[in-house]
Length: 355
Image (cartoon, rainbow, N blue to C red; front, side, top):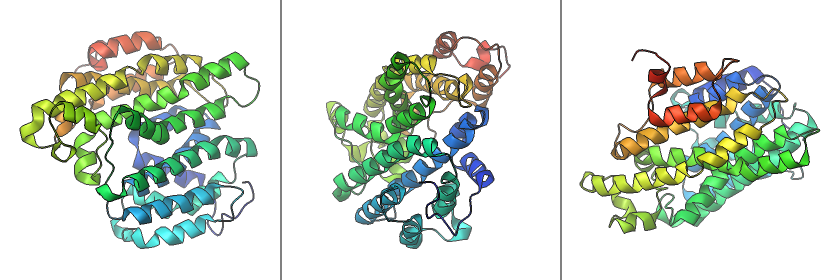
């Protein structure tokens, strides 16, 4: 892809780094504790994915238009396709909010040519590592939008479809990370171990999002990722998921989803423990989102009903700060011990910080 057609927009690494801060505080934490060149590479890979994610989540774009936009974007990512990023930008233009009304996500979509121009400056082996999983993510999102086009939003049917969606949304990102980390001289056995658990790391993080964001996904995007057959087991329809009269029954399904996420913790931990610290990779970068996921699952188990309300489920800023501070120190506590502590109670309490 190097030297291709991503002008007249100029590369702008600084803008891309700032953009991540706006669209995802959690992912920004990861980028902030990576060293170069991995920090910039992961930042750009994430923004390429975020463009597609914003289009897929948009409630104001008709499904057939969403699908067409995603397919155009995927083609623009293909180094063997003549489609340009400017064609995608022109196609999405009519669906962009007015500039003064754009949130950070839509600003990223509007600036997709800048992201692509910046990405095109990366070494060939970096582009080769990032492009296939991003294209797979985009193609998967297009497929899901098309599959559920008549529903007005995504309506996941069963556990198999939930895992399929989570693979495209996040398992692909696990493969992206692994592609970057396994460039060069890495033992075959270690490479195999990484690829055997990379998808599980991504699935864990996505299933945590599915479990904690039920209310926002339904009310803001008209998407229901909680499997329909699990809801039917409780006598609830997907359309009545956040109805207060169903709170107790729906909370049991949220907890079931969180427990399913919990089942991926061991493989995700194994992935982190196998990761090579090379190309600017650090233990903290991926340990932080892993441990924050552990804390969020703890809260989901304690109060799953909050995921069905505007209140939502999240861990406190104090706990986030304690996790980031501990993981960022050279003499940090081993990951298994941190996981054990956070499973039991908020980590800032364990770390001796006042509430």
